[in-house]
Image 1: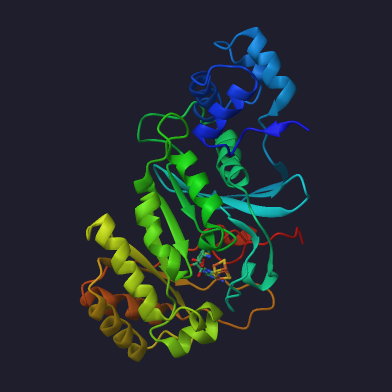
Image 2: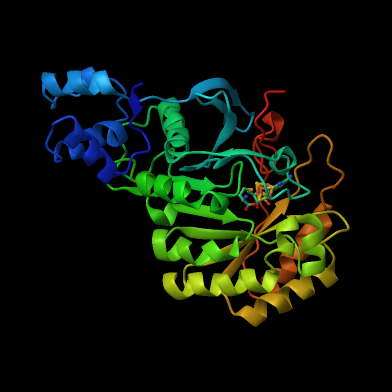
Amino acid sequence: MKKELIGLSKEELSEELTLIGEKPFRAKQLWQWIYFRGETDFDKMSNLSKDLRAKLKENYTISRPKIVTEQLSSDKTRKWLLEFADEQRIETVYIPEEDRGAVCISTQVGCAVGCKFCHTGSQKITRNLTAGEIVAQFMVARDAYGEWPSPTNETRFLSNIVVMGMGEPLHNKEEVFKALKILSDGDGIAISKRRITLSTSGIVPHIESVASELGVKLAISLHAPNNEKRSQIMPINNRYKIEEVLSACQKYQAIMGMSRMITFEYLMLDHFNDTMDDVKELISLMKKFKLGAKFNLIPFNPWPGCDFKPSSNNRVHAFSKALESAGYEAPIRVARGQDILAACGQLKSKNS
Ligand code: SAH
Ligand code: SF4
């Protein structure tokens, strides 16, 4: 069987070339074809010899996952249901803003964390995605917008990456980190690490390494002001308590610098975590840890079979105001792509 090249690190690509009797420096040219130009046809790689192209064709593929469906929301959010060789499926979302846009990528088929409010979490875990499968999601999105070769100016459609799709990225750390290194490599796709955000439910032992091994932005799914409430909606909190998560965040910030704000995602659940008492408790918790922090208040996106209800607008605004008076930025996230179930927590792997 031919080997897929997408997802190999630069070093691995050089090794492959050595294996077929080529000089390793060819790897740089090949890397640029794959990740800078988005080329999938070896025959079009004009600066490689005919002989090398033939050898590559014989041994390797550069492919994309199968696009099962592509949906466009009335607000221009786009969602792909993608299928891999073993017929496992995941979703990838593109969320355009006025002069840029973020690709929201998945890291696992399903998720083992099982948060009560999350559609992905209700599906259990099937498997981790490989680095290649993670990188390919971004490439599918770029194909759709014809954004090859990698634009050098700041006005790109696909300017940011958020690791906020299906799955818990820090349960698949090795492949996720490898993928993000490929995606941020300056000779290829070149999305700067400042424009990549990894969101986690709080897998404490790996949080510091997001800074030490990778250097991308960090978002924490906090969603509650104390352990009692958080454990009710996020079973992972029985393993890693809020205080441990926040201490790990301090270590992240000790490496990245205080100015690199950590975003705390807070899902607004009606009559569960949205009162003035809740926000007061949240503020005093945060003050104790002295983090460079901002909040992102997320309106709950309902899905069939989930009992939670979104908080009222009044409560969300009051919550946001209270956080702002305490010195934290606390924008309210506008739900995008709801008509095609592309919003946070709505992604799934079955096409039903
Ligand atoms: N597993 C990681 C990243 C994927 S989830 C994490 O949990 O952080 C991305 C974000 O969507 C998280 O903040 C998650 O809590 C949020 N989310 C999950 N279900 C949601 C829902 N139904 N409505 C709104 N946001 C949701
Ligand atoms: Fe997994 Fe994140 Fe969903 Fe929780 S919110 S179940 S961690 S994907």
